[in-house]
Length: 106
Image (cartoon, rainbow, N blue to C red; front, top):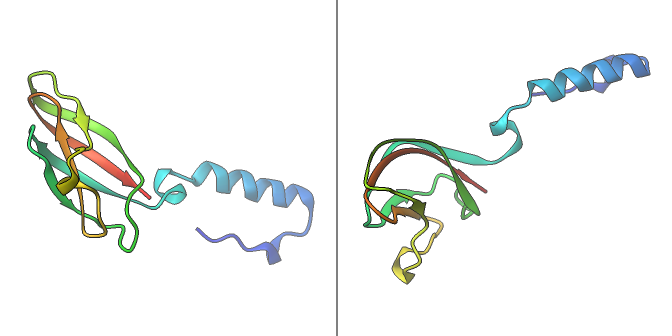
């Protein structure tokens, strides 16, 4: 989204433009991220290609969870071989299975 200051003559116009800009912002405008849909997770760590190269994501948010068995909690694996890297990130469930929509954040 572009904001052009040259067309603003007074404070009211500036305020109006800023308000419209703020109301048009969404999650993707505020954060570098990538989303993975229909990701099927089990208790085994699942490798997911890192689309934020050359950075490693700092965290993740589960946006939607469906088709679960057991009582799954989506977690970042703690095993050394499943550390997040420039190439891959990993998720798994603590119990059971789940299909999720997840966003990874810079």
